[in-house]
Length: 130
Image 1 (cartoon, rainbow, N blue to C red):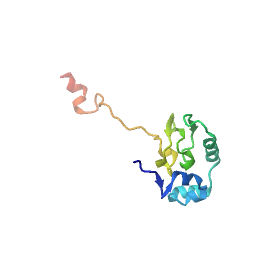
Image 2: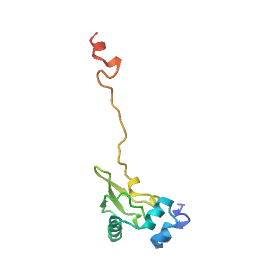
Image 3: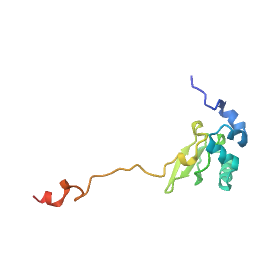
Image 4: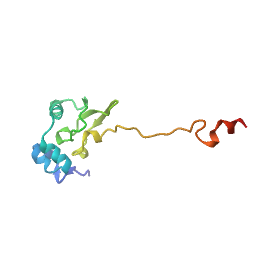
């Protein structure tokens, strides 16, 4: 039997019925403060686009990385800009309360290759000439 998702004791259906001020009471302090101060114009436009979207497979492109994942976004597909390219993200219930910027990384993992000639004593040109 699958365990039903709850956020602070409320199901996803109950969360969708709450308005932003009631939802803000359930969120952590930083997200609560952000919502209570009001959404920016870009965040409002993104929220309207998400509510209008009918096809869940079609992705909405956004650069608004400071938008908080709200219950209305669950099940939608978003393409979030990471500074270089677009990362497609399917919003799940567990992502509620996180920022969109947390879902796509802006930095790659550092992968070092082999050292070049002269980088170490063993790889110097003099040692190889002998």
